[in-house]
Amino acid sequence: MNKQAMRLQRAETMRILKTTLILGTASMMLTACGSTGLLNRDRPDEFAVQRQAPLVVPPDFSLSPPAPGAPRPTEGTAAEQALEAIFGGPATRSAVETSALDRAGAAAPSIRSTVGDPETNTVAKGRVTRDIIAAPEGDGQFAQAVIPS
Image (cartoon, rainbow, N blue to C red):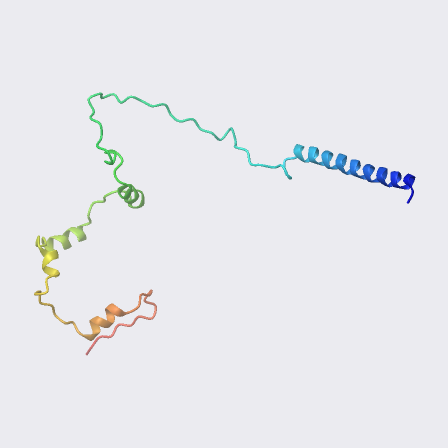
């Protein structure tokens, strides 16, 4: 190859490189203008931000500070709040519930320790009770009642 051919080849390579560089820069500039593409990122919504309510001084200044770790007296515990949300608070007992509780009477204060005592006498109910307790749970679709004669 002579020198003139090498110059032409080098000029051609430079022209291709320059064209590629210009096209690459132009495409990067155009993608920056679009909402999707290479340079897309999530931006916070400035209209979705809410301001916090200002702090209010309570009207009674003779309040004592709460104990550390104690629940707020007006809110209760998280378990109480969950029960309140699910069941809607305490309800009055029906006449049937009141009657059943009156007939049952009060439990002995030591009932829990008496039940767990090894000296407590128990009655063996037999195979039928054991089978009833061991029966799998179900909707009772195929349940049958057998009345002994």
